[in-house]
Structure formats: C-alpha cells, structure tokens
Picture (cartoon, helix red, strand yellow):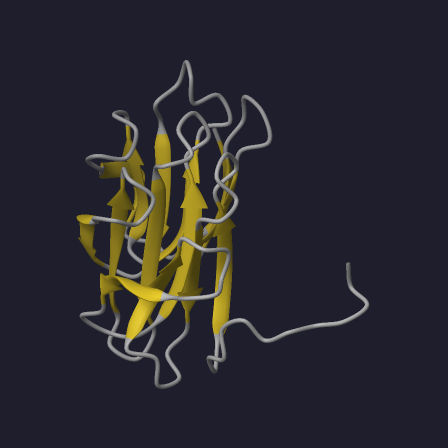
Amino acid sequence: AGSTWTNMLPIQMGQEIIIHPVDTMKMLVSTGNLGVSNFVLKSTDGGANWTPSVPADFTGKTLLAQYGSNPDIVFASVADSTTGVGSLWRTDDFGDTWRRTVTGAPVVRVLPSRYPFSDLTVFAATTGGLLKSTDGGRTFGPTVLGGMNVSRIEWPGPALVVATSRGVFVS
C-alpha cells in the first residue's frame, strides 16, 4: 500500500470517505462544490463504478459521519458558505435512500455518541448553534448554545467540548 496510486474517482474536490466495515466493497464519498452535481457518491464494487447517492439541492462542503452501532447509518452534513444554507441528511441503508433531518444554518459537523449501543445522543454543530438528538439522529432540537457559530465539537469521554464564536464550552 502506498507505492503506486490509481485515480478511482476523478473529481475536483473529494471531501470524505466512508468504507462499510462489514462489506468493504461499499463506499461513500462526499464531494465539494467545484462543479460536482452530487455531493455524495456511492460505490458497491470497491470504487470501480460510482453513482449519485443524494440529490444535491445546493453545493457546499459535505462531511460524513458513520453511526457506531449500525454501520449502515451515515450522516451527511452540508454547509454552503456562499448562500448560508445547510442541511443534515441521514441514511439507514448506507446511501440507498436518504432523509433530510435538519434544514437551515450550515451544518459543519455531526458527532454521534461514542457509546451508541447505550446512548442514542447525536450532536450537530451549525453556524446557528448546537443541535441535539436523543433518538439516534432522526430528529434534532436546539440546545442552550443557540444563536452562535459552532465551529468544532469533541466528545472525548463523558465531557462534551464545543468551540463557538462566543468561547469554548464544556458540558
């Protein structure tokens, strides 16, 4: 590995890759906003062929996060810095179908619990505040950290650390 390279997906801006941990032939790739018409592409044959997975309604940076207790659950967070619009999508079947769970401020990061078998909490960092889900990311609601730009969230253990436009908070 690493001696020779082959371009398996010639796009202008690849963002993130999720490889299914059980069926490693299944892959999702998020793309950026440089002329790409779909922001998540899917391969079921190890990258030989790619198909659009989520219809793009706007362009922007798309980040992917896999839900730990079920590798078929993946979140795609979209942040469009040119329009100030964003959304969060969720798939329960590794990209065959997607459902939008959040629309509004750009979603810059999604962070599922480190203990997803016992804790269904998922946080979403947006430019309009921190959102929280207690049902595994099916629905999200506001937290007390609303109305501020959340640029980073980390959950290294029992404490949640959030970097915002008004400081760094810990819970």
